[in-house]
Image 1 (cartoon, chains in turn blue, cyan):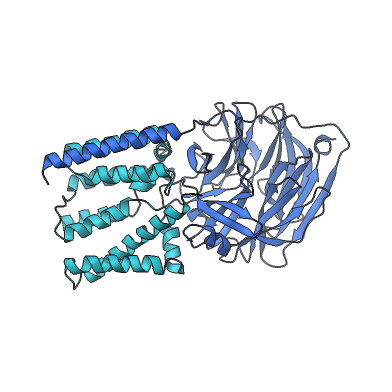
Image 2 (tube, chains in turn blue, purple; image 1 turned 90 degrees about the horizontal axis):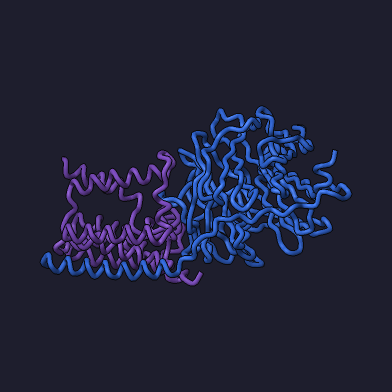
Length: 373
Length: 188
């Protein structure tokens, strides 16, 4: 084939590429970078606090509980097995009715069922942190491992049916064989009704990430939340249409303080992650915007004791924090991986693992209890 | 997921090319290319379609995914060269530059360098620029392979067949050891 023919073919390919680009640009819906601002939650009323679940696994682990909201109430899902990251770990859970009734524990997402839900089918060795996909009905994001440990994990978008996963696909987040991305914290809403997924990269130079998705649930953009510290597990709280704060766990072995980053452009860019003055034993936090720039946070704020878990509040967008309640005093072993979400009835559901990843505890309370003296 | 079946079929073909390449390497020890290529491709296709639900192949899909165009293209290119097709080999400098750029790209993804080039692969306008640049490179160098791979990857990306990031269609980390091996063999 002569050079002229090659160049004609390449020119034809270039023209085809222009057509494909025109199609892609026409289909692309520009992302909106304005947060859904948290509504002002009711602070007055009769203080309410109720422990709705206090479960201890007879054997093995029960860790990283997630809150799944639905029209009737909520579900709490966690991963259970002989040991974390072992090949017998599945996701189990309970349903909590609005009156606080809790159903028995049942399997919700197994490795085998998830492997069969991929097209084509894939090997899934173990499961980890799971969160609700707020952008779709009956959908989850789960941390799935096909080989190795957490550093080799991927995030799977799982669409659930009444009997388990119907279909699944992995989010495309890294050119490193799509590895080392995990989830921990709930999604964050945008003003246009879409949601972004806080995620983190855990291999080598760790960083937090804000993942934007398109109308089909495919990754459309990703913005890093990073700095010199090994920041993971971002908990993002919008403050106004443009501003938000991300509270992150320091994954450094010597890290003794909670990390923070801020954005003032809807999550497009984030300040370099820096240390706060809040002690923290390398543990994730749960936080909830309660309106008017106030944030409720559940945090392990004793760097030397992962069993101490406190409820705190900031009235100045996360600059300073005030202790509200001691949730765990260390007597029940490590109490970690909290998640906190507002229920449709205005109450707040808080879950975390206890007894060093061997139990799950859940409380329902209102702001009158949280902020009361 | 309307594209699910297409992705399933493309994954089977992708697996077939990988398995066919393994068979081609093994058969190449004692069988001539004219015979080993069709046998290897038939073996690859047969294994990919008949054994795709077995544990090892489900593991390969999980381990080496997402499916892209680059590995089948390189495998078919190598087989075509063995069959005597006029395939222009990559130059040593070309491979060295690619290795340096791609290793740097992977380092940014690993957080070793605080920039994120991979993110450009989600957006249509940067992807359009990248593909046109690769076409221009092919035009100037007089090679079809790179533009063909670039545009095929773009077509798969636009159709939603596989990864939502363009780079996954035209690059794969397996290329790093493969290029290092090729360069080492040329040196010694």
